Length: 154
Ligand code: 4NP
Image 1 (cartoon, rainbow, N blue to C red):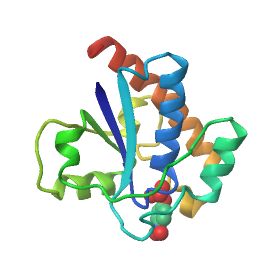
Image 2 (cartoon, helix red, strand yellow):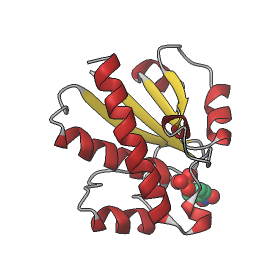
Image 3 (cartoon, rainbow, N blue to C red):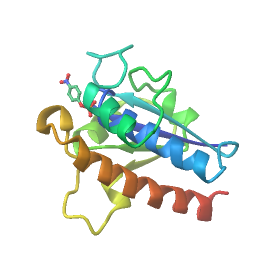
Image 4 (cartoon, rainbow, N blue to C red):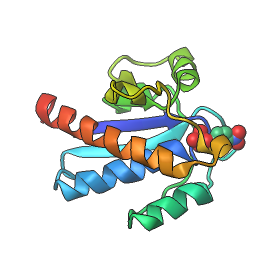
């Protein structure tokens, strides 16, 4: 099993959107017995909460499930449990890197999946309100990620 963890700040907007979108693409490609996905945050304000209304609304719009998803904190064990830890912005990456932990996981920035995009961080819709922009980036990046995992690891 290849395990993917998306990380953002609050684990209520960007990383749960990426988790739900990637899971839906994994199911569409019938890879759910090969790839698993989760998400976590570097901040503790929203632990246990369901995704933000803006994320739920856009996932509903595209018919993508976010059932049973609640916010949690990233932790040191995640370095051993996951093959990829994919951070939404530079500050998330710095905070993840500060955690003591194993070295199994490959640490990536989400926007590394989309090198042609001028944006180098996934904008935080908690502050911008633009969930559609984030959905478009996340959907495109998840396609690239799945192609990469399929060609390198499966
Ligand atoms: P996220 O967005 O990191 O994409 O989940 C945020 C959610 C909550 C907060 C910041 C960012 N907050 O400050 O509570």
